[in-house]
Image 1: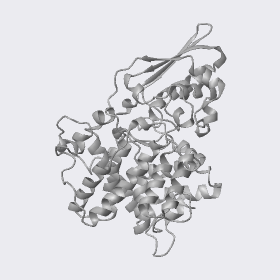
Image 2 (image 1 turned 30 degrees about the vertical axis):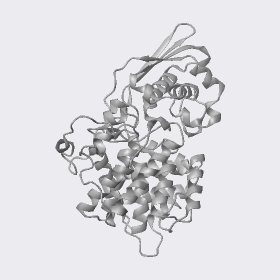
Image 3 (image 1 turned 90 degrees about the vertical axis):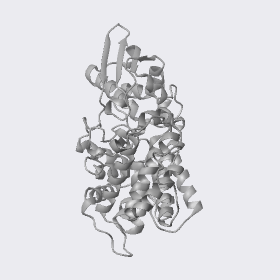
Image 4 (image 1 turned 60 degrees about the vertical axis):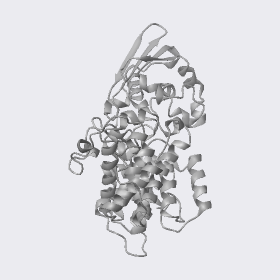
Length: 436
C-alpha cells in the first residue's frame, strides 16, 4: 500500500507540473536557491532537501488528484513522499527504507489523528497540513535514525510549525499546505538532530496540539496507540484510498451516481428539468463553490462535478480548466440543481464519512432517474483495479514524459522494495524517478 501511495504521488505530480501554482513554486525555489541535495520533480538542477519537499508537495497536490488517508481525511502521500524522497535522496536510502519511513509517518499521523479528527476538521483545520507535519517529521526522524528523545523533540517542533485552513480550499494555497507539511517535517527532524528542544508532551499537554487545534475532550491516548506497529491503519477499511477523479473526495460518491445514471439510461441533458442532490449537512462546509469560475473552484463544486459527469460521462484532468468550467451545457445544468439534506452528519475518519450522495433527475416529461452511492470508487472496500490505477498513472505522467520514460518510471516504482542504496556519486533511483 505504501508503494501504491508513492506511485500515485509521482504520477499525479508529473501532471501537476503544468499548473500555474506549480510554476510559481518552482520559480520561488529557484530564486531562493540552496545546496544541491534533492530533486524537484521534472527539473534537472537540485536544490536543498527542505525546498525540494516544499515544491514537490505543492506540485503533487496541485490537482487534488492524489490519494486519501480515510481515517485522517487527509492526503498522505503528498506530505510523506516529498519529505522522504528529499531526505532519502540526500542520504542514499534504499527502497525498503523509503517504504518503511512512509509507513511509519502514515501510521503515526493517523493514530494521532483518529481520536481528534471529528473536532479538528470541523473547526476548519486542514488535516493534510496539521497532522501531515507530524507524520512527515516522524518519517524523516526514522530515516535520519534519530534517538527516542530527538524524535519526541521533532514532533514537538513540528506541532508548532503545523497549520492550514480549509477556507483556502479551491485556491493555490491548499496544495501549498502539503508542501509546507513536508518541509515542516524536514525542518523539525533536522533541528531536533542538532539539539533543538521542544515540549516532550506536545500532543496531550494543556495548551498542546490536541487542545489548541480544537479538541476539548479528554483523549484516551493509550487506546489511540493500541496496535501501533502491529495492526496497520494503511491496510484497514479506513486506510488508503486512490482517487479515480481529480476533484475533492467529497464529490466522488455523487460523480459515481451521475456516471451510473448516464451509462444506464443514456439521458439527453437537454431534456432534464430538475436535479436533486442528496447531501449531508457537512457537505456545505467542504463543497463551497456553487458557481465556480475557475478549474480549482470546480474541484470543490458538487454542482460542477455532477454536471460534468452528466455531460461527458466521465470526469478527468482536462475537465478542470477555467475554460471547461465555463462551458455552457455544464453551466446550464448547474442552474437547475438543488441541495437536499437527506443524510445525517457523517462520522469523520470512516469510508462513509466522505459523504453518501444521491442524484435524482427529473426529465421534462416527468420521468425520474435516481441513484445513490455510499462507498465511492477507490475506497478500500471498492478499490481501483490495477489496470485502472496504471492507466491513471500513465495518463498523468504522459503529460510531461514520453511513453518510454513513463514505462521506466512505473517499472522503478513497481520494484521499489528491491532497489538498493545507490553507490556514492551515482545517480540514484529517486533522482531517476523524479527527473527521468
